[in-house]
Length: 331
Ligand code: ATP
Image (tube, rainbow, N blue to C red; front, side, top):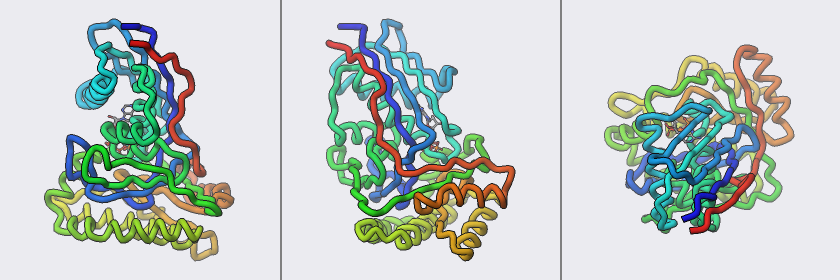
């Protein structure tokens, strides 16, 4: 076996407008419902995978060795790639997130999308986008969507083959988003655990599973019409319903803080003032605000005017995962 294989890939985070919350198969990462997201043009993960002759995989995130479950999540993912490529070399993984890790800002989406592309390339696999999306899904469900430019829909599917994301054409719909960074610390309940608890204990979860496909269809229709008002309204409502479902868990899963609620009020006020924008939130306190692409700078300025001490990340629709360099290893 050659030891020359190496590849560096870059992937951007994506923020769901119709949320993914809950797995029906934890091993294969098959979701209960489909979801839809916007891949951003900001805050990428850059990941280099190199085949090595060390006895063990070496995994660095932000220059530091990963340990425990964070490390095994990566090495198990690499095991899948080794199995696909029918090879057994160890690797070194060197990954850098621009976004804070584990703060509900989609680092696992950009992280596993970049890892899927870099690792599969280093091992000499040449996967098409669908196969790459399926592979990325095994690392983190939402990573399946960061493979694609702009808007992507992840079909829930019923098995490993049928659960993948694909791009949704959106002619005439120019979306922007401002991410607020209210708290960059890693959350205390991981998305994985929060999902599991919601699925297992929230009496509202069956309603979420029943309702989400309807909202996904409504969202796809709104995108086809390039109807920004409908896209934003559906997205905000869907996010609130996801959090309502979590709040019904035992014990409740609550990712909001007081600063999140202030931001939700600010969004409503800005909208009342004629700056059309909508809020969405994930597994963390940081509110993301959807707007038209040409309103991003004004929205970021208005947020900072009201809340001078928070961080903002202005973004627009961005590209899916791509290779920066590659030297695939021949077997
Ligand atoms: P986030 O909170 O960042 O939005 P998430 O909501 O999907 O991500 P988790 O499922 O808890 O939350 O994922 C966060 C975990 O993903 C991190 O703790 C880390 O283990 C893993 N992760 C993040 N970035 C990377 C990366 N670049 N490479 C490998 N693993 C990563």
